[in-house]
Length: 193
Image (cartoon, rainbow, N blue to C red):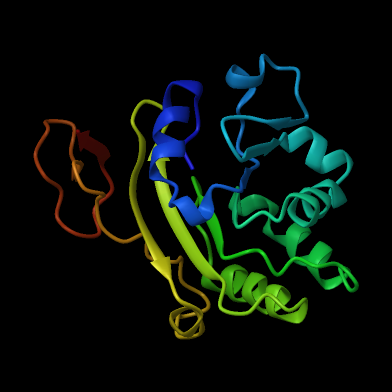
């Protein structure tokens, strides 16, 4: 899911018809006018503000259950709380979840595996894990969707690979002079759209 209001149309367009019941927890105060803590945006896109989530984490599960959310997108820094919530979610029907999307930060494979195990513990079988990276200015630039069997094979101590550039995007890492950096060298991310 993309991060700012000018990308809301793109978010809605990229969601598959079967994922129109979606929930995001990324910062969207520019869309909600800084007011909404729990807001229904375009179509079936729901928003729980990060601040509201931290005050009342169970709101996330309330919305997923009540609205039969299929596509959930949260910042990776919330995974420990989300996993803990799921472990305490017996009696809830969260089986509508088809895809769990994580992005904007490095994500350890161990955290993704823990989330998958917590989802399975509440009956959410075969949930796809989508990881991505984006920039406010251009939205998501790369990503990859992992099937449950692929998640199990990820090296636990490594960050989850983000996959390649999305269609219509070209990405490279460059040095201060604008030359491509060799693999493993730190540089600036250059995105061409």
